[in-house]
Length: 202
Image 1 (cartoon, rainbow, N blue to C red):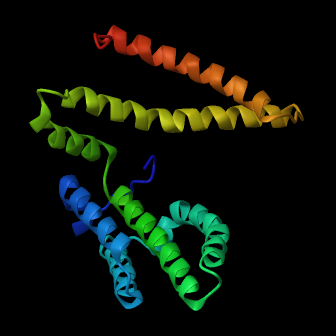
Image 2: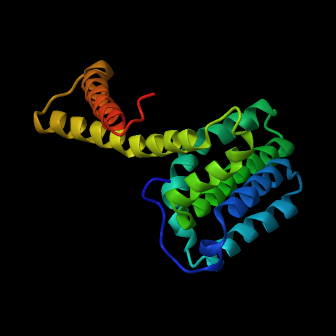
């Protein structure tokens, strides 16, 4: 969801994050249990309709859906082989692939139309009833830090790869992992010091 949000004023954008989270959960559940291809086609059409309602082209989900398709290039044939190569096996494999693509597209729509702040606030509201056992504010902070660290680590990996490429260096995965881990630890230490300076070290 990092950097994926696209501002807008559609009904989908304005819907409360908690409502969208609930509908997303229900949608995922329905997609997971659909066994009728016709019903599944209607579900896929509904997702496309939601993209249109949000003013988003379906291609907006491509950065998330695209990598899944590479996985399915291997997963679908394996599923068919496990099923004995029958027509029923192809149907099962097709439904499995379709479920995954539609589910990822639906999740992408949520992140396209919901800010990170709204998601964090929704988590805090959900956890408030459990205040005796869970500190909702701290969980929200943890989620925020996790979300922030994903692009931070990705940037570190990209910088290390670019530095290696500039030096014409090739090497093992260990030669890449060591500088990434070291720089990530330095970044984590800096974040820890910033939190401690704000009295959040306990």
